[in-house]
Structures are given as structure tokens and as C-alpha cells.
Image (cartoon, rainbow, N blue to C red; front, side, top):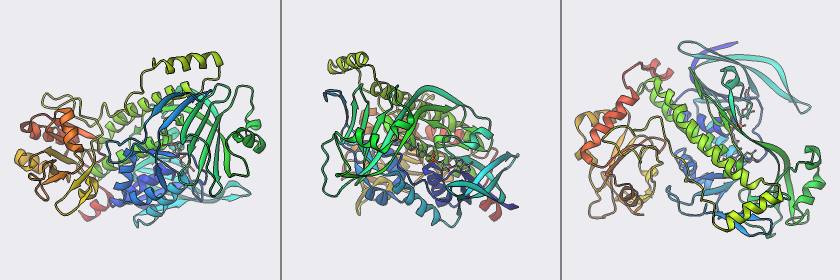
Length: 543
Ligand SMILES: Cc1cc2nc3c(=O)[nH]c(=O)nc-3n(C[C@H](O)[C@H](O)[C@H](O)COP(=O)(O)OP(=O)(O)OC[C@H]3O[C@@H](n4cnc5c(N)ncnc54)[C@H](O)[C@@H]3O)c2cc1C
């Protein structure tokens, strides 16, 4: 059967990336259907780490507090050699640019259950589990997605014979590593060369048991590279690299699991939640956008988990797509805005994959001689620290205009507590999501011309001043920078105003307030408002 209703977006895949995108779009009022092959959520833990930027996304989704309840702030990430000498320390517990520590540990099934509840609470989001996408066809103004129903019979997904075809303006392939949508759009993966098998074990230590292990650690022992991390409150995870002489079968035996764990934990002190071998790979899709089809999450990229960034990168994709599709479907930007999706997401993810591979190559050394040379270099301080987390280098950012401060465009913006005159709150709780013009120590309205005001109004943007001086704060116009974070950020970069996108990346910055109208004009022309506009199904119906 064909459901004739034209949806705004069909999402294939209801893992964390498809779930989060369905919430972003559903909250913005779009008609969304999301299909997943399996009748229930994937029950086994995979991701355990998310970073401060993703915490901001959770807050924007209205589930910040719930995620905090199932997460714990990160401790120091420490790497040791075989003799437990410290090689590297990465301070994931330090204060980040986003108000709170750099990282958090959580349990993926608990997060997916939260997403699930939120997505299913949205009347305009139809979650259809037990439906597998079998065909995607593109037309000039919409796509058609065919799906077939299946049920689990004797543990095997089995088609029931029921099918349907749905139509939508856009289709998102969030269907994981073997993405059917990616293949049907003819998009290939580039293999960046990393491939190692690791046994992943999740445990629940018994009540009151205190384990003598580093909180978050890599034991770079060439005899058996080993990872030990929290798996969210109440859980612990160990990961062991498969050695060349071992078969996958040997490694997965329960007695082998307890043998590997025996230096730290035994069946008397913990319950085994699950164990499985994963092949960690580094794959990156060439293009993430083909007409009306877009890719997000593992469907577009996979990476070794040493930076804890696979899911985080996918959640960034969804967050990035959400505001682009929102502007396009509201007629506030041209559909060409989707072209810069790959241009900005791919290089950022490439840099994260490269850094994850670099970390993996340090951790996964199994040759004792090579490990000794690595240890000597680290202990002598001869290894440079990891590069800072990458920002955006291309896409919808203003780097190439004489009035714009190129080094600031594409950075993740600062986020802190602000005084509104009535209370001290998170900036993103005080200001609705969208484009923000932020000026330091002055009311931005004084520096915008009528064209800038009109442009901001068209895209639902807001202008707000921030000051660290309580005497300059004016309720509703100039907010108080109670933590001093904004003051420090502006001073460090020598800028007077920034234009922040809905995903908190900086579109552009100026050193002189007189250049602010030009920066906003540049944003307007890049969004190509007025050209080639397309509107959501709902807005078309209302027009
Ligand atoms: C051991 C391990 C540790 C990790 N640690 C971290 C970490 O600490 N931090 C981090 O950020 N990331 C981590 N990751 C990565 C993270 O788990 C993944 O990147 C993330 O789960 C990918 O989410 P996704 O929604 O893109 O894909 P998935 O979760 O794979 O979801 C894809 C969905 O699409 C569905 N599907 C597939 N084909 C079809 C079809 N044809 N029709 C309908 N539905 C379909 C599937 O059933 C599935 O539910 C780790 C991964 C592993 C394996």
C-alpha cells in the first residue's frame, strides 16, 4: 500500500542518531516517520562517553537533567605502560568551554530509552519499529521509501509479508554501519586503514565492591592492550585486544572472559552483563548528501572508540541537519544549504577519526620492542600533546571576508551561566535555540542597521549583549556574564561580536562593531534567503 501523505522527513534507523534527529525535527513541528528493522531498541551497551558539546545538545532537546541522572562526570583519562608507569594524561575532568567538565560516562541503552520516550511523546513523530527499508527512490520534489514488516521468529528477523511505501521531502539514512540508504544512494566508504578486533565486556560490580583500577585507563601492555572505563553509574567496562594467534571463538568463551578479568575482578565481585567482539574500523563516506538523501551517524562514518567519539559525531550530524532542514522547510534558506553539510561535517569527522587512529596506534602496539620505544619517547616527554578538538574549517562560516576574524569562525562558541536580572541560569535556558548575535559590553541593537534587524527577524535570530560588569547589565538586553567565560573568550580572540549558529558553532566574528551589519549581510546571502525556496508540508497546507 502507499500512504499518500507527504511527510517532511523519513528517517531510516532508530539508533541514537535517528532517535535524536526525530526529536529535533519533531520538536520543531515537522511530520517525521522513523523506521527501524528491529521491533525493540538495541539492548547492549556500546558508547560509554559523551563530551561537553553533546551535553549542550541534550539540554537543547529538553532532556539535559534526565541525561545527567544516568551519567557521571569524567575523571582523568590515563594511559599506562606494561609496568603501570603513566605515559599520558588527558584531563576530561577539567572545566570545558561549555560550562561543566569535558566529558561524561553513561550507559548507551539508558540513553536510548530516554530518547525513545521523548520521540514517542511527540505527536508528529511516527516511530515504526519492526520495519526494514528495502528501496529508496528520488523524484524532483520528494522521495519514496519502501519498507517491509518483520518479526523475530526463533531469534531471526523474518518478514511477515506486510509492506508500505511512504513519501517525504527528505530521507535520512541513520541506519548504521551497513547502511542500506548509503548503498542505495551509490555512496562509497573510504577505508582509512585501521582494523583491530577487541573483546568488549560489560560488568555490574556487586553492591559495595570497590575495584582497584584506574577510573578511565588504557593499559598499553604489548602482551594484551587493555581498556578499563566506567560504563555509566553502577557499571564497569573492560576491552581487550585480540592477539594475532587468537581466534574470535576462543576470545568469546566465558571462561576466557573471566581469565582476562581475573587481575581485577571475579564472579564473586561482579555480574557479567555481556561480552562481544567488535572490529574497530575507520571508514568515511565520500559524500553525505545525494539530492534529497542525507547520511548521518555510523552510516556516514566509523572510527575506533579510543576518543569516545563515534556516537558523539553522529549526534553532531543530526544536530547539524536539524537546523539546516528547519531553515529550508520554513522557507528561510535555500535547499542549497544542504550542500555545505558534507563540507563542514566531513573534515571535522575526518580529523576526529585521524586522532582516534593515532590514539589507537599508540594503544594497540603488541610488539615488545616497539612498545619499549613508545614508552621511552613518552616518558622522556618527546611526544607532542594531542591536537585540540577540531572545529569547522569549511561550510556555513565566514572566514574569507576582510571584515571577519577568520580564526574565530568555525570554533565552538563559549557557553556559561548568565544573570538575567531575575536569576542565574544556563545561557541556553535563557535564550531560545537559533542564531545569536552576541556583543561584549554593549547593546547589540545600537550596532545593527535596519537591514540587519530585518535579516535576523527573518531567520528567527536574536541579538544580545553580555557583560561581566554588573553596572552595565540591562535585563533582556545585556546579560551578566557571572562566570566571566564570555569576557575571557572575547578577550582571548580579540573580538567584539560573534554570530553563533543554532548548533553553537561560530558563523563569524568581528573585531570592530561597525562591521557587524556586513557580517549579518554575509550570513543572509549564504543562506540565500528568497532563492529557490521550499516549505514544509504543514506550511504549504497552511499557505
Ligand atoms: C565497543 C564500542 C564502544 C563505543 N564507545 C563509544 C563512546 O564511548 N562514545 C561514542 O560517542 N561512541 C562510541 N561508540 C560508537 C557508537 O556506539 C556508535 O557510533 C553509535 O551507536 C552509532 O549510532 P547510529 O544511530 O548511527 O547507528 P546504530 O546505533 O547502529 O543504529 C542504526 C539502526 O539502523 C537500523 N537499520 C539498519 N538497516 C536498516 C534498514 N534497512 N531498515 C530499517 N532500519 C535499519 C538498525 O537496526 C539500527 O537500529 C562505541 C562503539 C563500540 C562498538
